[in-house]
Length: 459
View 1: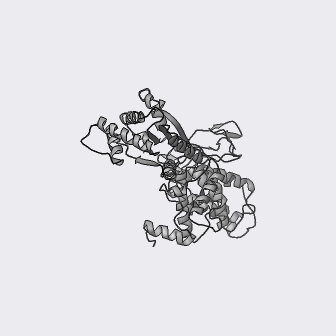
View 2 (view 1 turned 45 degrees about the vertical axis):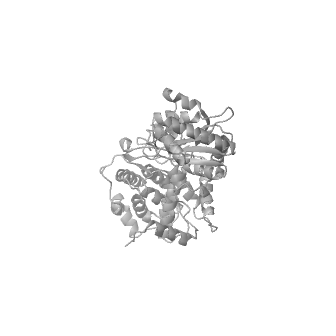
View 3 (view 1 turned 135 degrees about the vertical axis):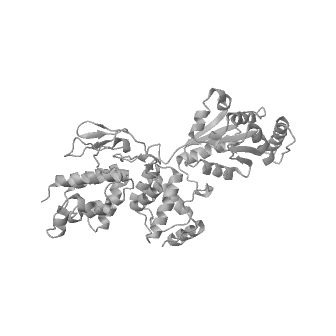
């Protein structure tokens, strides 16, 4: 019986097993883990320059989990010797409350004063700081949640200035919808005052994800052999679409899974299991699956939840919404492979839409030849074309991780794809079926395999 571990016990377990000084994939915005790729360094440089040059109002936007907060924490640490920072992350703050919070943080607070009196005190304080060669910067996080009134209040604060420079440096941080919100006509005053705008994005390539993972391992003092196999990194990239926070969560869970089975190397299969447990490959209203494109792999902007699109057929190939082409399965031209699908666009005829056949019963129902082969005349290998059909059906059911899962299951049976014995085909399909978490998609996969095995016409 497995014992539930506390957070501290979990950390201690990973650190002891892999030899880490601390957990490498936490989700807190620790500046020590700041990843200095081009986008992050460019953003840091822009903000440092904006504050030192007293530009006034600066804007940082990015999708959830792309590292906005760790960028800001790194900025604060970089300039803490000469800049007094006030950090605000209260989405319900009002225009008056923002001024009150600012003056209290600077030690100027007096709740009996009016807003105008507080702004006058703030202005005098900022002038004194300027004469001392120091600056004050206000960091406002979760800016997309601020009311229009609060944003207008920021605009008023940005008007505090001398003839030569802005007295208060303001960094407004928020998700991408903040930029859209600032496009409203009623907020054009604040938009026109933005002197710096940096957009943070996700990591764009598999190599960048690999470098990011290695960077975090180095920070915690890991100097051993590679923990994450290349195929595992590709799997992490697929499931995270390069979003740093999601990478951290997947890696932490994959390391825990590896530790539980006594392995010091994380495979693609363990990543797939970790991602499946986190529900990263499924939408709440049904499975949404993406086929990996040919050539260099590139994630879609919608990251964790994969978009569903209908496919169009033109005879022997399928054209997906992203322009990639997937050869249609021979033998069944009337039933093309859906590169991206959801439960409303399934192309298979499935008797049991509730969840398919139980995997343990799959071999018995696929075809009588399994029993015949198991009792004697073994020696035949599965035709390579069948594996093409198998992988395409599996991709429909579990997405781009299907190839990794298939490799793992073939290896677990002690076989290779080049000479896979027919007598073990039923067990292989059973094991692949177990990895398909959605019942409807499992049923589709099993139905496809029944038809393909019938087409083999093995005597």
